[in-house]
Length: 204
Image 1 (cartoon, one colour):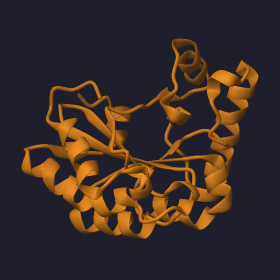
Image 2 (cartoon, helix red, strand yellow):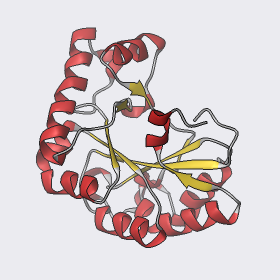
Image 3 (tube, helix red, strand yellow):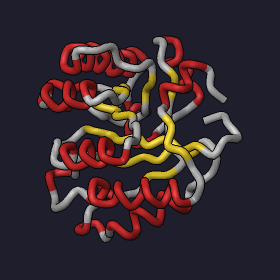
Image 4 (tube, helix red, strand yellow):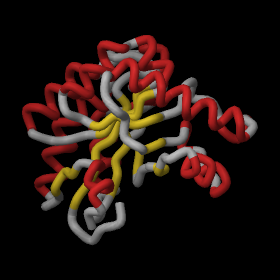
């Protein structure tokens, strides 16, 4: 985020399952912290209740494509279809207007692809760091390492990326377990957790 203020945004991607959502929402509520959730259209179609629950809890909903493909392998028309189909699915499932924010699958961006998304009315929102909690214990990750990665990335305007589920439902959702410690560590270092929607108000 373009700012000198000691603010950090928490974001979550949702493409697989809903395993971590109850815990994540509970932590955010108890600690009074906002977050933005980037959902794929496919996730919204499969889990409309979860999508609506995120919106009803007061958090922003962003676009993460429809089927989470590698955009570099698609033609421009196919990329546009991914973005627009996801937008329709999110509106239907969440029952609210999604934010005009798009996050590329796999963090795979190019100037051309960003310009295409911008032309569709979306701003590209990427991240300063990914906790890598989505890898799970099977992938060599731990809660402690997820927290460490988040804290190591702290700087004014940092955007932390996490996930609400795990690929193929493998094991515990480490980001959900790490979230309380991440929030506490961020605040202990003098940072405020801000809402990405502040960007729409031109906040600096």
